[in-house]
Length: 142
Figure 1 (spheres, helix red, strand yellow):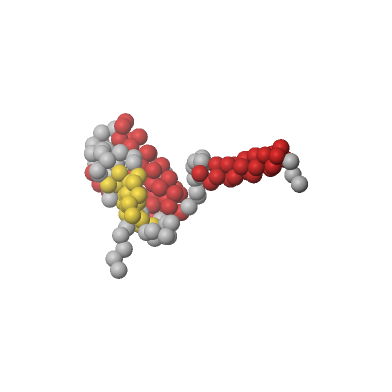
Figure 2: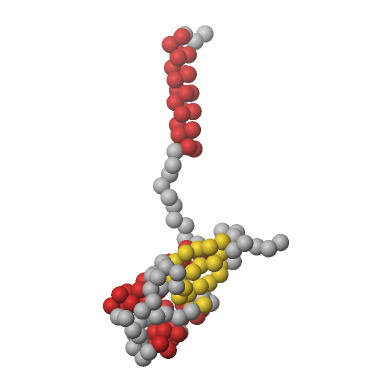
């Protein structure tokens, strides 16, 4: 038969194990960044938007007039975007709506795409002229 001291020790160990298990289940963990197609798309659009915003901070107009900002290829020719940026936009079917450095804001859309394989919920990713990128869920109709 176990002595009262042994019983108390066993209960102490069992209680400590239960507290540790509950602690691991409840306590917040550090966020884990997943490398998904959606995250890569947001990151790439943000990098392109940042280049455009950087140009807009330094210049008020585009070289060659308004026609320069209508396509990624014209921005490559002007030296604002790289050839890789234009290729990325084209290959990833990103709709480029145009860029005007005199119109910068969080409501002026520069590029937009739809991701259908993102976390089981289709989403729309929009890049704005201020360099921000926002993800919106697409509501499916039955």
